[in-house]
Length: 159
Image (tube, rainbow, N blue to C red):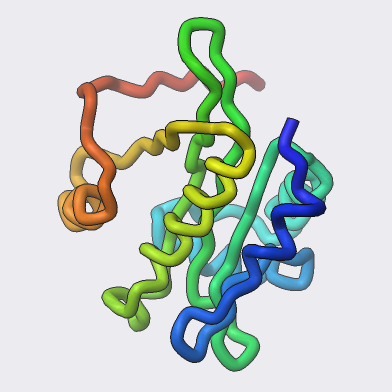
């Protein structure tokens, strides 16, 4: 289980004139807008419920970068321990506002997640990216990630 209390205080850092910090419930509306940039349009009320649950879950970590009170990007990761591999952090979402891309915000978020993982004894981070997001793939590769397989994701809607 992640030990957030002692490690998370160290994650509040300055990224140039921007602040990297833990997400808060007050960030819900901005997280909704940023998620829409990834193609995930989701009602604010439902996102707020999910955010409340995620913030209380010690196996999840949501970091944001803000400037002048505006959240410019976020990274959401969860503790992942499959039976068939060592424990990992699984990045569920990483997004930076289009008008602020190329300023090191995404890299700072990935670096903070990596530092956190290492302090937790986690030696790998995984993430998935849609096959059509070639610019994102280049970004991940520049940040030391490698594509290790091609796969399809399946979903079954219930109800």
